[in-house]
Image (cartoon, rainbow, N blue to C red; front, top):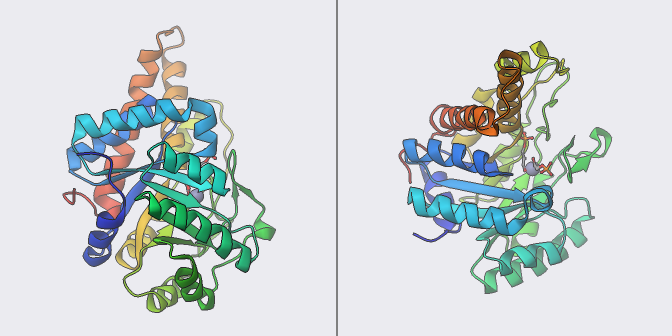
Length: 309
Ligand code: G3H
Ligand code: 13P
Ligand code: ZN
């Protein structure tokens, strides 16, 4: 089976009340860990590549490794651009064989967001590629995605129908209080499920995307802190909230930070316990296993997409 788009997976997920995991990939071990878990659980997958990942690993390497994942697993896998910030970047990904792209023009005013998104949709659809866009702004800081908390804003449900109609976009990321990274809430986690519900009412049958959806497992934060890290107050989205979102209109749940935490905690602990190891396979192997464990847990206990490939 070649790489697929998200059309079929989202339709089934919407109707079935579950969500597909979209996991960020940056190297071979991360890809392998994710794909091993999805294979064990017979789950559809979205592997997503950010602009930062393209710079780090070279998009050709990532694409070839994702093709290897398709060949070895036989699973329906979509290759998705995460947070594309320009038509040129989205076009480059469409031209190089991605099956899905995100144009994130959420930093622009509404009318401009519409016109940039529409331009990407026209090009992508001409080439059989699907498009995700964003309305509202998530807070958080990662390599190429930086929004201060003061500049973040919830999605306005009054805008979603006009946005989808005018752009022709295939899925929509909305802001309901999640944020990127490992520090999502100061104090009690709170998500605006009322916004998600209203968006779902305004766009019946339409797939919604939740970014910033890592749950920041405290066992990994503890290991990182125990072995010289410093992440006090790291906090993610409670898993019961993600399960609730997956049962509503959310069909795609984005997870990156949890994989980073699993890899980093595993490697930190490995070196603390085995200070003289110097063969990268000795620590990258366990890191890959940790990714597999996290993803399997997400698929089965949070997303509910096991057995849906
Ligand atoms: O939402 C952003 C993703 O987690 C990618 O982060 O830009 O650091 O690769 P990155
Ligand atoms: P996290 O930082 O919560 O993993 O979010 C990842 C994401 O939204 C990628 O687009
Ligand atoms: Zn994101």
